[in-house]
Image (cartoon, rainbow, N blue to C red; front, side, top):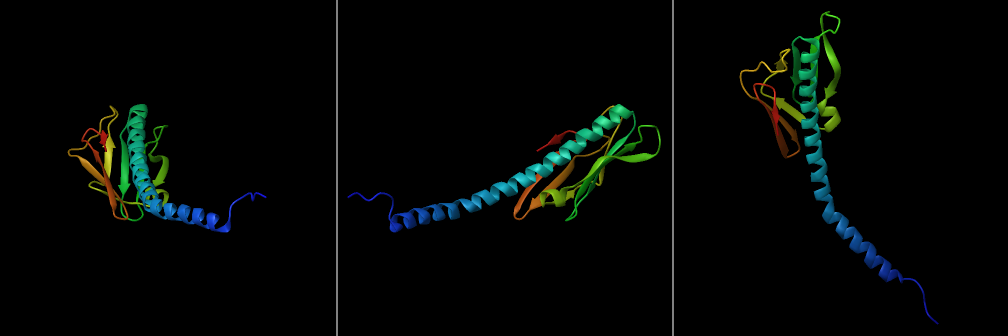
Length: 148
């Protein structure tokens, strides 16, 4: 008579092997998720720069990207109102720390874009994102182009 199936010992060996492989892969997975959070925050700031540039050109007025760093990091864009009224916030205020779990430091508090789409900065702006022990930066040129 033939026995079909697996013995309890065989099943325990397989479960132990799978568990050991999972434990070895967990740190790499965690690092990968941290790096993706840093990349996501850089993409969000780059998107805000593009939004400010577009709004400045479309509305024909100055548009500003504001940076508020630290543990409660936020980024937002302001420009003249579409109807010519006072300055207003364009789009949403991006809560970088809440959304990505990172802290952010910027070398300047804001970047202003002219109606030509060019930034009016006199020096490079550096934005640094930190999560745990990992750090990644974003450099913004005086004309408003971002480099990773």
